[in-house]
Amino acid sequence: MDYATLLRNRRSIRDYLDKDVDPQLLREILDETCLAPTAGNNQPVKFIVIRKKEVMKRLSDESRRNFLAEVVNNPRSPMKRYEPVLRDESFNCFYNAPCVVYFVGPRDIKSLDVDIGLTAAYFMFGAAARGLGTCWIGMGANIRDKGLLAGIGVPGDCRIVAPIAIGYPKEIPAAAERHAPEIVNII
Amino acid sequence: MDYATLLRNRRSIRDYLDKDVDPQLLREILDETCLAPTAGNNQPVKFIVIRKKEVMKRLSDESRRNFLAEVVNNPRSPMKRYEPVLRDESFNCFYNAPCVVYFVGPRDIKSLDVDIGLTAAYFMFGAAARGLGTCWIGMGANIRDKGLLAGIGVPGDCRIVAPIAIGYPKEIPAAAERHAPEIVNII
Image 1 (spheres, each protein chain N blue to C red):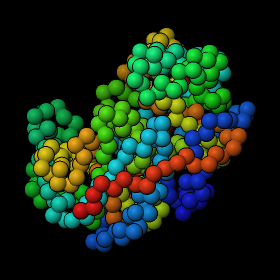
Image 2: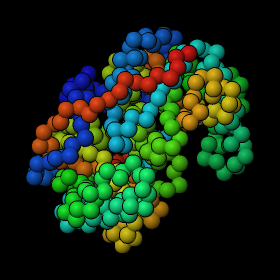
Image 3: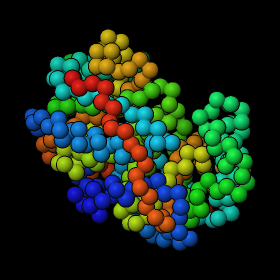
């Protein structure tokens, strides 16, 4: 796919078709994802793929509850507006996507967040190039239940940086508004 | 440009032609860069463009000295192997690129590192799609001199996350080695 088209098609998708992602296709996307640059070519990112609906529901519920507690405890939270949604026990923070991939990595890697930011962009483009949609679900990282963390296989020395939902979009929405680049200085 | 070609062409470039990057072309790349997703579409990234050779030299020297001090003070640093290079006063940490763009953002934005990781990937692809090369110079972020920080215009509430060199590559090197995706679990 042409890069200009890819730029238009890569959107955060919050509504998915009830259609599975072929495991081979996902593997192909993950292979490509690993071409992303990382600090010192350290490649610290590990992936956990969740396809089972009941496991996704547990992860969503745990994330929702922890996130709600944070919002309730901080009356000045910028996330205050989400409180009613977070109180809805049927809310699925993965937007009913058929699959979510957790991007995790060792806690002691200082560059882990930027490494996973770069890697996630590759994953998103690789998905969009194949007609798939993705959404980085920041809220979905709020997993504190040690049993659940161990249950999905997060290694003890690792932390979750990005849960990214993946699936076939019901539609590709219009681009979210962007401001012009803030160029502070040109020297 | 086709995305498959772009994936092959996007490399970390460490040797540049002595050829300027057209300001309009750079602006076009930065416009496209701002299509990157950020947490809550917060778009916290600001850009500082450095083209003057003498300013790049000061930034390189300051970064090199601070990085060297860190390596010297930590005998177990994984960067120990770079010590001889860091002691070389003629070393240019931007690999003689004609331009470097500093990606900075507010210190109080928790997601700043992942936001800039995502944004940097767009910048790198946008450059590669136009025949340009880039390199994220982690070392180049070690600017502590307050006069220099103010001189290039880093806002007081911001920190540097990524200095990215940009220019025309002398050649596109072979891909650095990558391991297969580490898929910890599929559930």
